[in-house]
Image (cartoon, rainbow, N blue to C red; front, side):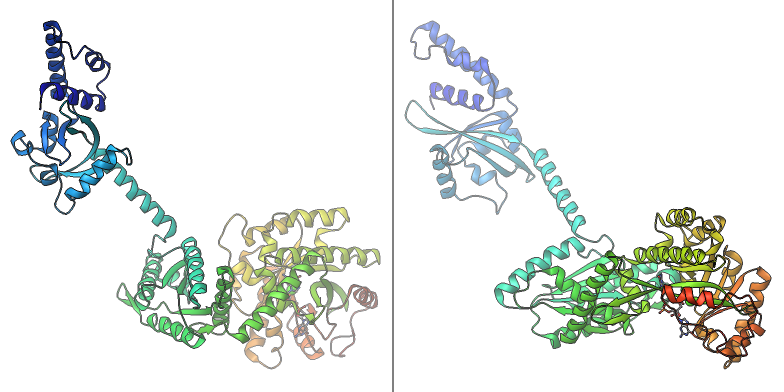
Length: 626
Ligand code: C2E
Ligand code: CA
Ligand code: CA
């Protein structure tokens, strides 16, 4: 290469390397001058360029269109870890690339043509190999110049960008990890709810295209809370991990397992032909979970209830499918746990009925269309009506009267319970006003309060306001709370126990309802700030026929007397039962013997008919009160 053309090429290289204005000024010197001064100037310029090229931090190199290296600066040689002899006259394709990543000569030739013609960007990122075999990332800029003899030269400016690339790689890995964490459950590594929805949408789309059906299996570990409570959270965690592993092992690669709640899992299987295959699949998973898993030397079990549903051809809404599997799971749990239930035609009909019932209930509650009836409580010694319990009723247009026992659980699921309870409270207060106006000022009114009502932020305020504005004595109002409500107390600030004691301090009465069955926590009697208890009707029913029940009732009554608590026996259906209870020291009864729950007008008439001015002739005379 002639000094002139080398100068020109170097100049280009320096420009590409960003070496600035000085070089440009020198380049503008009169290059073609034949005078000595001009020659001297050219030589000086060449010296400057050489100095700059030698000092440049970027690797500079020049090769021809066949990639045969003609010149390289010290930085290039240093970066490549090679001597000039190892480089000049050879092609970078032979020494600069790790094996397996070498582009072919024809590829490079074509690329250089495209770059020269401006069809592709003149910059490339390459992984390069040094003389000692170590690797680094190089960003190579390509320039093209033609020498005075008409030869095309390729000018390379190579910059080591390993650090930047590695940072970018770290960033990519971090981004992937975050994306994974956002879509996966940390404990089991399974997909989470968000990922499940995405996967289901995708699977339903391709199932629609291929005409296949997608299976959804929803699993809930039976008695998981017990594992946690008895063996600790670590055991619970291990149970979940074990379930995750067993499910994964029992499924195909194309299936998905997601953890969607504490102990709830969802399995999605594309291409399940029919309900029989779906049920087999469910049984398979159930069997996989039936073996115990060891924890601290004991065998623990994490069996599951499983609800299964199959998509309809062309179904695209994954929410509906999840809802169906959820309903099947609910059914599996309701009918005894550890079961596999498939969402079939029959279940679909029941589901549809329940859904329409839910819609009707929502509407009825929204329109404040529920009714209230009142059941009297009598004081046995005097025959006086001492109170009424307010009970809710739902008259359904199509199904007739639906019992609260049937619709209250549904109301709870729908989040309507506290609204219903507040309406019962208002009904109780209204009834109390009517009774007072009719001269029955001493008849107490009670209403049932679920834990949803107790925790309702405006419950106590509304109760206080309701009694205050009517000028009512707070002592004339009673709130009935189920023992289970108190039993699930965890000591929080808005715990039922705390609210009960607030109500009592405010002057209201609180009764523990359905007492004597279930938990029958005698300790509650001493701990809670209650007014008294309502003896459960299941126990009361047996007072004559079952000696153990009679003994329990007698014990409870004695204990309550000692603790200064009042007792009301519920579900008293005949005079003999009333008499026995009176002998045992139970002062108040409620039940069909006296009256069923009745509408407000009848309740008023009932109170008028039983003022209690003369003592009750005694429950010996059956139906004296009726
Ligand atoms: P509960 O609080 O134990 O109410 C007494 C239930 O026993 C009422 O059933 C009543 O009709 C029934 N009963 C009364 N006397 C007799 C009898 O002599 N024999 C028999 N076998 N049963 C009798 P109901 O009205 O069907 O209410 C069922 C349950 O629903 C209530 O049990 C109560 O726990 C709940 N409930 C009713 N209304 C409300 C409400 O407004 N809010 C809440 N949270 N729960 C309510
Ligand atoms: Ca009650
Ligand atoms: Ca009760």
